Amino acid sequence: QVQLVESGGGSVQAGGSLRLSCAASGSTYSSRCMGWFRQVPGKEREGVATMDTGSGSTYYAESVKGRFTVSHDNAKNTLYLQMNGLKPEDTGTYYCGAGPRCSTRVSLMASPLIAWGQGTQVTVSS
Image (cartoon, rainbow, N blue to C red; front, side, top):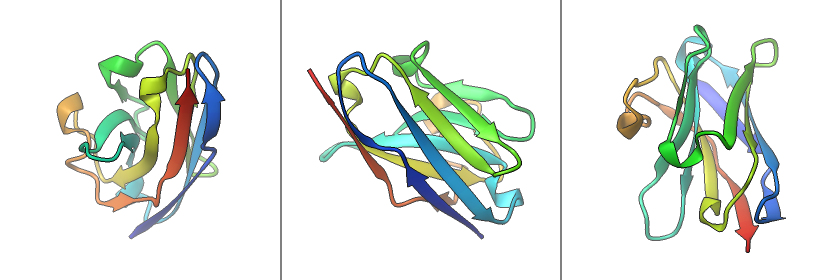
């Protein structure tokens, strides 16, 4: 099993930046793929970005390409999401997920993931 703890959320104005962190502990097999997802009330959780921590391959939702960057510190088994150029539509609760593999299809980012953090709130004001 793997446990995930997110941190780094907060409130910023449009155009600002935030960096989220997700510390993983437990099974490294089950955290081969790690990623970020977000959800707003009344909507389904959507994939933001995932990373195969073994190969370094990354996958991004179209809405965040060029603005968000996902990275991983192998020594700490911590996933980061650097968010620049934030927009009000980026507001939501951001969750970290982990699983044994990543989907190569952005629309199916969440499918292989088996563990989730509790979420951290990001609020972007206009």
